[in-house]
Amino acid sequence: MRDCILHNPRCSKSRETLKLLQDRGIDLPVIEYLQHPLKAAELREICKLLGKKPLEIVRTKEALFSELDLSTDNG
Image (cartoon, rainbow, N blue to C red; front, side, top):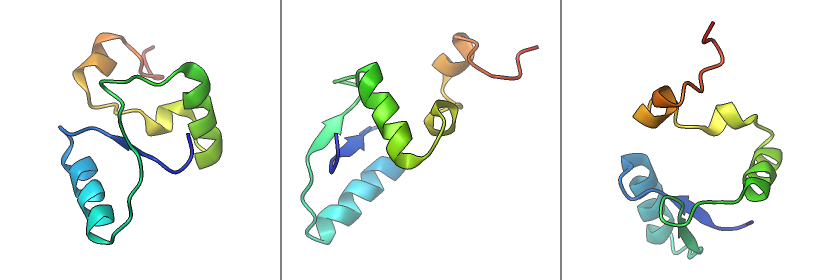
């Protein structure tokens, strides 16, 4: 799971980051995580490497986040 780009082509920041790397000649494997979802163990590894909790790397403004009621302050 190391040295790759987890990419969402619908996300402007993801597209900008990928372009920046390509413009600098940095060629890393690209994983479109919406097409190829990560396994729980891979997500745990990412959080560990980043020193983050899962909620810190989740796109909390996505509709699905609200639909699934994943907020920690839900009463």
